[in-house]
Length: 119
Image (cartoon, rainbow, N blue to C red; front, side, top):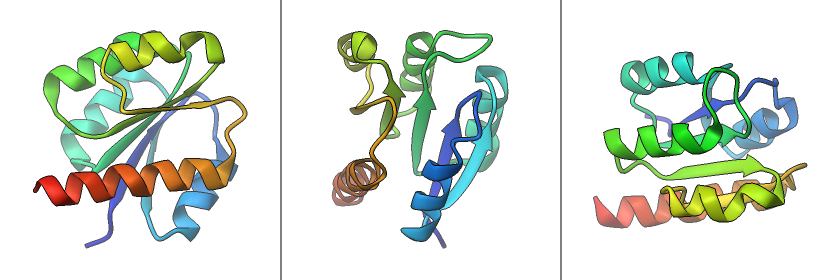
């Protein structure tokens, strides 16, 4: 079964989706926090990537809500100013905008390796 990544972001993030799909991941997209939380329950992804800020919910709040529901690895993509806050609320990794695709894929791989070792 392919590894599923839930990408919650108001923008398409086409480059990120392509980079992750080329790396062999199945990417499921949601455009806001409400749809993202619904997909989280329906799809049961292996990892979550959040764009920051999001409509309907600040990205930091969404990190906290996801962390309350699960221990899935969370990567946040956003401005440098929000890095510390996102990590303090439970994000496992932070990539600044605009994301470097090879860095994003490397962080995803590292978090998934750690998750697989724990299971």
